[in-house]
Amino acid sequence: MSSEKTYNYLKYIIWPLFALVLLPSNLKAIVIGIVFLSLLLFRFKNKFYLNKKFFITNGLFFFFLTLTLIYSSNLGYGIKKLSTMSSLVVFPFMFSLLRKEERNYLFSNLDTYLKTYIFSIFILNAGLFIWFWATNYTFDEMLIHFATAIDKDAGKFNIHPIYISIHCALAIIFSAFLLFKNQKTLSLVSLLLIDAGLLSFILLYSKKGPIIALVLVLTLLVLSQKNINITRPYLMGVFTFILLIATIPKTREKFYEIIAMENLQEGKASSTNIRYSIYTKSLEVIEEAPVLGYGIGDYNERLFKAYYESENYILQKGRYNSHNQILSFLLIGGIVLMIVFMGYLTLNFLYAIRLDNKFFIAVMLFYFLNMLTENILEREDGVIFFALFLNLFSLNSLFEKLPEINNKKVLV
View 1 (cartoon, rainbow, N blue to C red):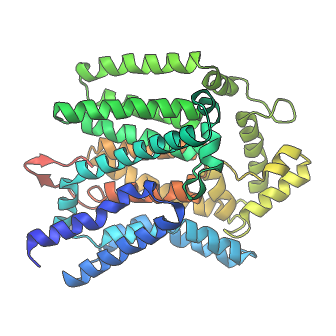
View 2 (view 1 turned 180 degrees about the vertical axis):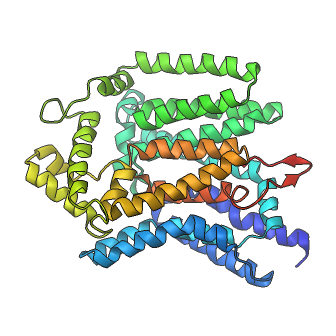
View 3 (view 1 turned 30 degrees about the vertical axis):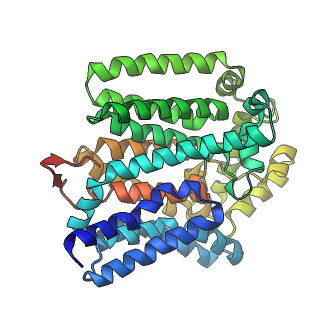
């Protein structure tokens, strides 16, 4: 196979991963499996190679996660959870198969991949909105019920508003990276229009965590450019966005909950108060097994038991997970697993800082902020894309100098 054909083959192997969000839940794993097998075939045809350091750094955490099965009594549940979280080892292995020149080629096509993801997220949101508007609701009803409809009534395309909000916010961050580069007028206008649409959907979903993370991360990313021509219009845009949040009753009430946070037994059953009570109960459970936790098979059941012991009807009925990824890993594997996980993130973060990889830093920070309010690595819609983006963007951070493509350094 000629060098040009080899690289084109590689380009099209990876491409479908950035449109996964458009697929129904039962097809996502099939497509990832096809990409995985195609990469293996590609590797065997072009001399086998495995970057062991990369694979160990980004895949070791899943090994420790698997070890907690040893002291889990509910093996069936544990295996099911590991299957859901398997992207944490599948993607490190897939990307560790790539040689340096192959990785460089992937990054030379990064704009295409990011545009594919951005456009896919917009199509998903717009498509679902138009479908429900045409078949079930009036426009005014859509403004009220859309977030519930996509979670309950979209069949194989069901997605929780939190996770589609995270997708929208990530797409906006990716578009910022593209806008910072010299884009043609048509591309620039298209990206800005798509961003406006995605921001409208984010306001419609009214999920505090993704909104706060987006504003913080995007602000840091814009300020890091040290360009007044970018900073000034951005700050005006942020002011307008915050004004919209303050004037729309649904979003205003959501953010007011943060100020008026109370325990469920003392206040109303708002999402913020429910989380406060969950965190309180999770910490009590963690204190009983702080070193090794309860195992991947038993951790949620132990938390549910604590809800029943507390006689809190809302927590009992909801059977909520910990709604915080760090707390969840403490429940699963105690301090040991939490240290391994934080080491995994910290190592990637430090390498990104060393190479001034601002975009990768922004993506990692965005995910970490969302982990403080959601168990995003325990849901398919969260873990697949976290593993994809972290491993892709860390290819040129871990153990490598930044390559040069067309005499320009790659910053992701």
